[in-house]
Image (cartoon, rainbow, N blue to C red; front, side, top):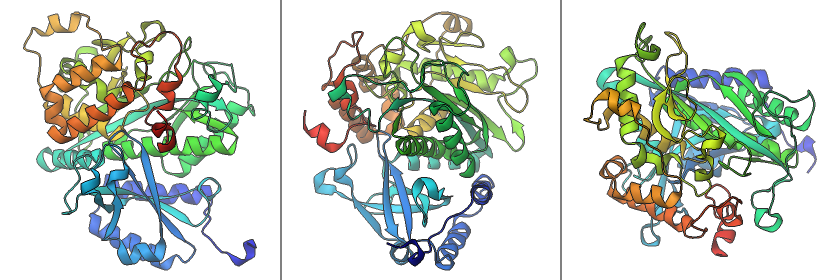
Length: 478
């Protein structure tokens, strides 16, 4: 169709950044949702160049699902959107398939038109049951309720920042084609911080970083990582629900941009043996007003007793929650001590093999870094699990010095992680009986499609049946 016949919304990057940062500020300042909804609906009505609204939600395993609604239809029907939950693995059964999709109007993003196409905006949705109540398997709803509860009860805000590593491979759909090729091809063999201006890895990082900046991520730094063709793009800490939304957008942006370059952005934890894997170090802190409650001048390793209590609770329940932080067969290849693997159930300011690190910080930046998180984990489940465990979980009755000095290890395979998860009353209390059982079932279904012993070679099945990679066609071919 002649482009002259169409007039779809295309916003320059500097204006995009201004709009998205404004929406983010509204969320941080907790502007009433009804007021934001009214503002967004008026904007959509007035802006004639928008053709569709992308509404996205995340399933139990962490896959991002997107539905494009015609703008005019959405404005008439936004209070009665439904979808078939039985088609989403880990959601409802066939006999109870209809689920509702509510729009979280403050979680609204203007999109770079050169990446997503012109004339579209994006908003996060909440999955509700038939009766309109939040659907238990939607961990985004669970995280939102928990963090809002913290603020209402004690006036505190949970903050997070994620350091998400990924690989860039030659060719599009390299993961889906792995069972045909049996290998991944690096686009760069440079390494940590090393990439020449204009080379394929640097061009990808620059393009993705520009898109992140335009979407209000508040970028800090970006660089090639230790392994060949590996990247990391860091952005500022923010409220935990916003941070989890940004994890999903980060991966979506990277995949979309890589595809435009005929490449694949992969967030498999360990796609190639012999080199460092991908992690998603998750930095957490708790604030009240302008005060960082994890900071204490003169405190042990520069953090407060509250921070150490938070750490101790996570360490005590580390084996129980390991499956939620490392939910794939491939994730347990990353927990390999030869590559700075964070598989020791301990905390340290300097030991990068420890599950929890206490980074060097100050009054503003003091935080707890959980390093044993895989980048394929459900970000809402991660935030909810770590925050609820750290703030409300059980504590080890043993002597503090004894429990911190001993060395225990996380499970080194998904079967042990599933067994510990299923036996854990604490993980059951976190998710609820039904969701706990569903999560164990979908993880076991993937595990049983793969050899039980990991071995030294990455198996096609651990990629083919990976929850972020496989499609229904491949899953059904087992």
